[in-house]
Image (cartoon, rainbow, N blue to C red; front, side):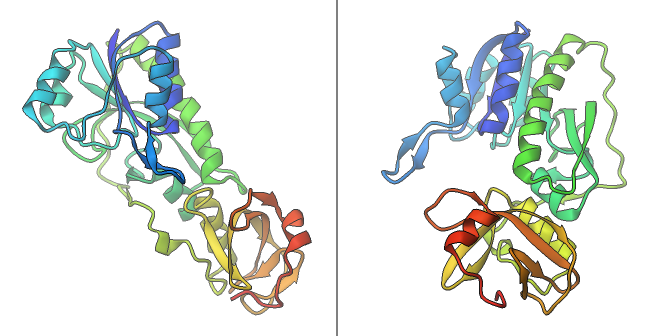
Length: 299
């Protein structure tokens, strides 16, 4: 098929690779414009742009799809289908309707659970037992279109958002390749009205750990916000990012260090397995503790 691919972050790259491996023609790749990044604040292309250019694919990065000229250019591609995964721009009706088969979205949740911007984070933080990928026929709503394919994967007791991100990214590429092979045979299934939830964007104000909360909530916060923005606590005036954890035995006043990097919470305790000091790489907790002495109680 002749495909227009629309994606931006690293999560989108395996889908682009899967479509090429399946033999589809990529008419154009749409992605967000390069933005300043790093210490020098030089414009940096998105992961999708970098991958597309390495593959010799034509890349477009309009700041909006609303201008008529942009929509005309999109329609002129004469695509059979659009494939969208974490693109980051709203697709107007004229864009949604331009390809012969419309546009399909690779969404990282089991719709209608977790429509919106941060489905992986929210699934972990909510304590969901599973998540997955839905291949959805896009409409004018926010992740409201009918679902063509879905596949679930369990959320393990120590899974982080980073773990699920990588797993779901590969799953999404495999499912979209399968969907295009049998696009005419797939039956769109409308999403049920019951069970709708919205995955609002993660705010950095959610990242500070409150040890007075139940251990299960603190554990899910640490894993759900890893690696970005990263749950954190303050030790000796230094912000320490907590990246991996698990529930532990033990009780004490909230924030009390029970041994090693096991911290008492409002109910139960959490063991920190991986953390990152400011300006340093992520390290296992035992390495962190070689150079950092924990107080008796964490604030």
